[in-house]
Amino acid sequence: MLSESLMAEIWSCLIARDRIDSLNLGSVDGRLDLRGLRLPRPSVTSRKLRFKDISVNEVRPVAIDGIEWKNIDFSRSNLRGLRLMNGKIENCRFDYSDLRGIRIWATTMQDVSFSHANLRDSVLGGVKDGVWNRFIDVDFSEANLSRTIYEAAEFERCAFVDSNIVNVDFQSSNFKNCRFEGELKDVLFYRHGFKGEGYPPNEMMDVDFTGANLHDVDFRDLDLAGVRFPSDDEHLVIQNFAVALDRAAAALEKNEDEVAKRLIAFIRRYRRWAVPGQAQGIINLRDLAEIVGENGVRRFVDALRK
Image (cartoon, rainbow, N blue to C red):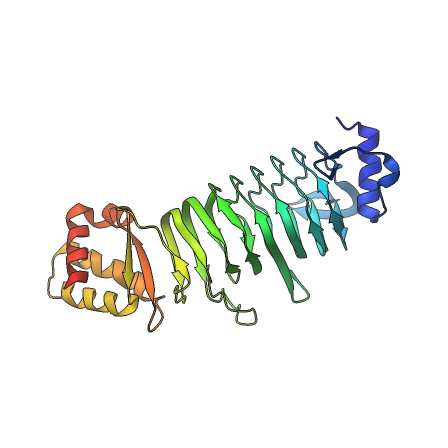
């Protein structure tokens, strides 16, 4: 276990980007052993801030600019609220660490593991001076990614296996050769996020959802030709997506009952974001059943077949 005095020395080196070899720390699996590290308390400045007629001192979180971390094991550390920018993190582990509320800008992470880490409410898609974060060969297995925030980021060969991905808007993030397993709920993927036309388009190339359960997951302005979807009774994969939805809506418009109206509204929601010639799309039939019931699901499938 790291002592308080040793942790102070470690942070002094990390923040100042000094070498910490002289501290004679051990290693684990070829990485510098900083397991159990705790972030120093934020410093309180003399600057005054006012909130609802209350005057408080400004609190300055720990921020590191120009980071270069390589071959370090931060497993089971408490790094809540840390700020990282303009650097690279390589071959590091943050497994089982508390990383809630961290902020990351313009940083590349390669061969990094966040397995079982808590990243809730963190900014993983921060952009600084036109540079976005890159996550390459990163393991997010069983990490808590709920309510993480993105302007843009690049994910390549990343694993999201049984991760907690709830209420996440990936905006202009780009995914290549990534794998998702387990439940995703209330998640948005775009080709371009809001005012994100200046970022590379998200082509979703070779993205594997075959082991995923997609609840209220939207794919907006995406062709999805390079995506593999689950093939089970809960998900319905629809080829030639935009045309199929148009034909189903036309068939249902011949009816004026309440179920038909709900189905048409449901179809229009998906049709709004479908692109011309879209290769495929996916509907979660359980989500649909909550809106129109099992009979409505059967009518929707029949309309698609017709």
